[in-house]
Length: 296
Image 1 (tube, rainbow, N blue to C red):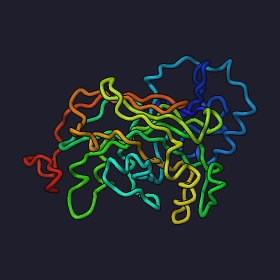
Image 2 (image 1 turned 45 degrees about the vertical axis):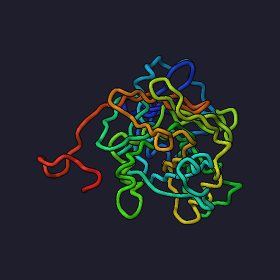
Image 3 (image 1 turned 30 degrees about the vertical axis):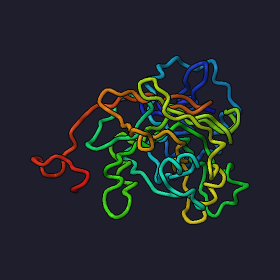
């Protein structure tokens, strides 16, 4: 099953086209994404029993929006690949490094993203969407709580991230557009190997990152277990699982996104996102003083 977003409405995506969930279900399921994830088990059962080939309509893939537009919680995992921990000059963690991104940073799988002042970096990630309420889940049951997988980018502004006595992970990764998701949410049974998928990204056609989710230090089931041992995960929550090596900060010389750059991000079996970055000026509440990530 592949769930997409067309005109802010949930649609099923297949080779035959798209099917509007609310219309095809004759109102059994609404056009509200949050409500859909709340009833994920019912949606899956309905899809498995139906044949939508006749009712599928052609659509423009560039029109797809964020398939998880309103998560109540966003979790993000840092240093979850050993090669990325090394390039970041950190020790390999013994427990997941957890932070969050603000929901206002989320955007869809295509479009333009404004560059704030500073050094803007890329971080391609496999993203988990939570299927049902989870608390203190055993690792061996972790996949039972996964609604689907999607492609994500944890776009990061590195100057603000490193400002102050402690890292500003959440704030520096939450500018508008810094959390692209898409192009669709894919149920784990739809991919070749849910535990080992290739992911990567390119800037202006040059490969920057290429890894495999089989190299995650904390794999999907363990992340569900670790996070739910503390927090209660809710249907429709989003978990960015971490990025492999190849970020701009870890390169010699360092490289960051510039005006006009195109970022292409992909995960095997799920799809591809494309974004263009454009220079802009982000201002503080004082209209005469430009934004300075070192002086907030």
